[in-house]
Length: 347
Ligand SMILES: Cc1ncc(COP(=O)(O)O)c(C=O)c1O
Image (tube, rainbow, N blue to C red; front, side, top):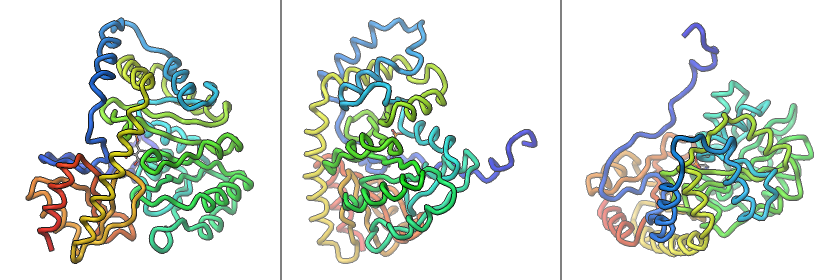
């Protein structure tokens, strides 16, 4: 690969391997499908599309619908088939990337792929926001700071005042702050006002979780028009496929199901936490998301023990500071029962 940029030789594959199991709780997906009436409308829309024609250049119709839904000017919206594309474009644009550790793996992936300096500051006690460490790391040339709120993979919702003071300090020093709200519906948190007031703040949101559309691929960015426009123009033309666009538009016409699902998931999450509190050795972290991080005596034994009982979770012990940790997605009530029964049978 002599023709390729040298930094690509360091590129690690994305840390995911597909495994099949009856109870699939490894990808923070919604356990529920799109409501049947919405799916039917989406299928009718799909059937009426001319499949021989290219879709919109930059998903304009979806952008308009997202803008109406989010109460945002359409010029400040960028859309992509998954927010990962937006993370990638932001990584490409960044002079350098600052992150927390542990963190959603693709922030680092995008920085490494882009060949820019990447630094991560360890979370504090009980996975708290390391404000002091991040402020210290903000010296020097500005770049892009990624922060998921609530946080992945810990599930923590940071106190809003801490996020606000970090955003203020970072943006005053010229940094751009990307607030990834992939899980915000489960926390009932909303940082749109921070992005409205400050052109150096952008929000990322996804259709993959509370919108029940993980397989369809859709995500969006809300920001200042010059930021959203630049990021959109960095993405390839015709990136949102016509079928994805049709499905996203149908979901955006009936968004009421999202909040209802998020409420059911939050209630099930509390039930999972209460069940796990009975475990003699496993310790679940507080979570404001649709997943729970659990510290066990041995992540491999916990993962394999659950899998032998047909329950698939995700090991997290490859992350710094997460020794012994696994992550379980909040599933349907029956899936959560199966998980709890299996977990409580393990040491
Ligand atoms: C924090 C965070 N951001 C973004 C994503 C990816 O979203 P998408 O499916 O829209 O690419 C995930 C997926 O797990 C995530 O956990």
